[in-house]
Image 1 (cartoon, rainbow, N blue to C red):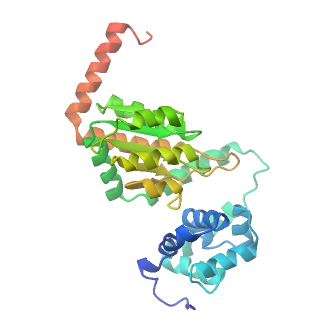
Image 2: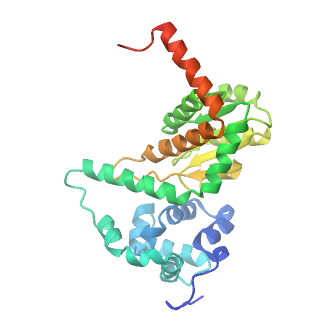
Length: 294
């Protein structure tokens, strides 16, 4: 499938994302890793070589080429050209991408961490359509109960979301960390309830088990994850994606926390009287219990 640079961008059904999602269930573990990387790093793909892509994923260049052909391209160069055509602004971002690819992290790494989190926030805002966020807000706003599930590093986000939702009047709780206890809690979930599942690479099997159980009970499942190819997406009614890249450590949860803040803010605006009444009750309780320091 050869293209010239003057051709029109591919139809949306023929984007790299559409091609990957079509074949996702048939992919090997190595191919799944490549799929996640390509879905989450389109800007980098527009200018990266097969060696650079392979190095990020831990495969050789030949594997990248073969996977590109699996997606229906003539090879990686054909795939890269298609990415460039599909998003015209990539053609004006060479300097920024080159600077990222060639970044020297041997110097002071701290500024790089801040800069990467800022990019993560921008990328997260780009990945999630307002309509999709609005759908998630509507589910959380209407649910009589919200159960937030997350393990490992995702625990922080699940706890934060459950706490913030409670502050604006939503009956919410953080699910237990063990599968048996989580299963007991899920046994009380109804079709009207909402379950938020936070799951980022590496994906824990017990998180996915609980997500599957929630969906089987008819609950409305919202996934907060790091890739459209993440396993949890197969159990979700609504999926929201956050960028989690860091210069050194495995993951950053900054964008996930901001995404959860956006959901809570949306819920508060959807039912302002409920939120205000709940906040008033909390302030009264703080006063009576003398909670706050002088």
